[in-house]
Image (cartoon, rainbow over all chains, first blue to last red):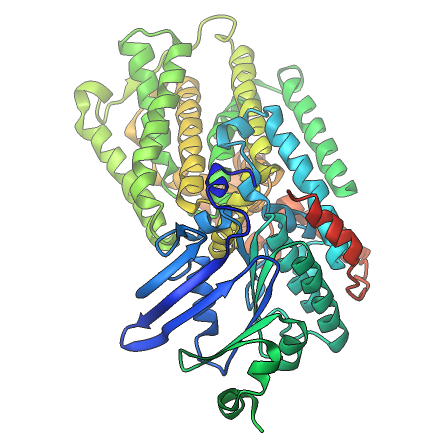
Length: 262
Length: 333
């Protein structure tokens, strides 16, 4: 963790949403929901369409501000912090629809994720001072390792607009990991993946857990969620209906009624 | 990698040709044209970071060029400052002008930002006309040249070409590092830029101020080359010309926009039938590029090569290497 701001947050701190409510005009998308994401934990977030999963993810990553309630990383209040500050504090995310830079290579897309660790500013970079080149070299070698790690070693030099769907999803994860995050928030990372690819995704999530990274998994593939998660939160109509271990949530009558079906 | 080597080779060839140009140029007029291209490139090279990389549609840079040119003419002429100091002062002034213009307008979404820059260009023209005592009004101002050894056409060409080379080097440094990736992220997906921590307004503003400094220096050299400036020298079409050079050259590269300014400046002058067509030629070329090679003429060869010898992208199943991923993550902290 290089930024001074990150040092202020104690190691082992968790990312918390405390009784957050978010209204859009007259509609309450999220109503008093709490969630604690711990380091080294894979936390599933499930619920029908429109239940508020993505809204909660956007509140945690900073794209929305809560109408009520608190967001915090350890003792650090975050509810008014811009997205960029949360990125520097180690909160990374991926998008439901992959958002890549189409004209850059897979490697460069991943290197972009290391932005919070680049200290060389505009003028310093323009005048070719050595720090910018050194930082770029470090970002390049780390991004290369991450890409081989997530299974994109064959596509490192390929332009991102030539990637297949699964490759785009894995590249989004690699980019988030390049920031050396404490937490990654994944918005439907298994969407459109084949069974084999979902298994690979599960392997990656397990590796993240062992590395001490907290993972929030917003996902519709419920059997995948119950298989890989340590804890699961179920939402319906903006409210939390159950939080617990996969076994507890899977057998909760309310969850079965509104979401899983008989 | 080979495409990059080819580009570097082409750039080196261009640099060699540019450095020796006074020895092989057919006449003084060609040398004048080359100096004009270099002066334009000082501005366009900086503008390229704003338009080609950060994707901000500034169509008002003639306003900054005009401020730089008049500042140089007044400081080096009326005030009798050394031309080198006058160039530096013009650059600084236009950097400040860029900051004052960019701070409010770079918050605006694309179309409105373009309108704001256009408005500023028009206002600058009016202010120049109104402040007759300082600027000579509609009559204009004589502009002093540079002292020896830059007082000959070849000497002034080398000075301007050196400034163009410095701008190219500065933008190339930005473009290939994290700062450049941040600008491209702002162009292609603001949401992504935010997610990875790029301060969107701050990054746009830095590039814009840089383009202002370049416009100030370019404006000074442009004015010294013209030796006399009037408000008509800085017509709005010139602003569109800068913008179009970058679009025709291709966004997200440096060589492309450079070829753009060379082609658009030199072709109508050297091929006389084209000169008769005037703006029609620009329009036709722009239309052809936008429709046929929207990626710009800088990438035509690459695209043609890819068309002639298509390399099928083989589908390789994604196969994570989890121990390697774990090692990469451990090297984290």
